[in-house]
Image (cartoon, rainbow, N blue to C red; front, side, top):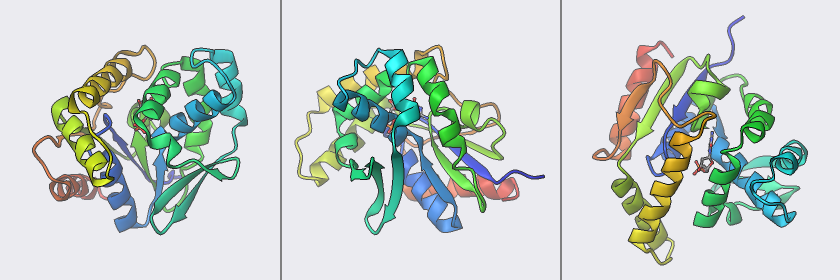
Length: 224
Ligand code: DC
C-alpha cells in the first residue's frame, strides 16, 4: 500500500525552511512537523529537570517520557509541554544552542525517531528539519534542501528580532549560527546535508515567493 505523502524539507536555521513548510502545508492542506521544536522542547525540559545536556542516559529517558503536543492556534502552532505553553521559551537563541547540543547525541535522536514518524498521516505531511529526507523519512516522496549563506541567515535573524522590538547584535548572532552549523553539519549521526535526490535551493538571493515557486514546481514535477 502507498504510504502517506511526505515532503521532507531540510536545511540550516534561517534558510527560510519554516516559512516554506508552513506555506506548503497550508496551500495543500497537509500536516506539518516542526522537528526542531521537539529538540528544543527536550533541551528545555532537561534544563528544567536539572539535567546536564551531555547526560545521554537521562536525556533518552526524558525524550521517551516528555508529554509534548502541538496545538494549531490563529497566530501559529503552539508547543505544549505537559499542557503548558512553552512556545516563547523554546524560541530564544539559547534554547536553539541547547537543542543543537542534545541533537548531537545519537541515542537521543534514536529515542525521538518514532515520535516524528507518527506525524505521517493522510492526506500527507510537510516535515521540517535537518534529517527528514536522510534518516526520519528516507522514503519521502519529495525531498528539498534549502540553504543560504551564514551572513544572510544572520541578517534575517536580526530583522526578526528587530521586528519583535528586541536588540540584535549581528556579530554575536553570526557567531552563534556558525557554531551551530559546525555542530549540525559535522556530527557523526544524521549530519545536516542534502538527501540523495533532493532538490537543493539556495535562498541567499531569493524571497519566500521565489523559493515557494521553485519548491512547488518540484513537488508538481514529481506528480504530487
Ligand atoms: O530548526 P531549529 O532551529 O528549531 O532546530 C533546533 C536545533 O535542533 C538545531 O540546532 C538542530 C537540531 N535539529 C536536528 O538536529 N534535527 C532536526 N530534525 C531538527 C533540529
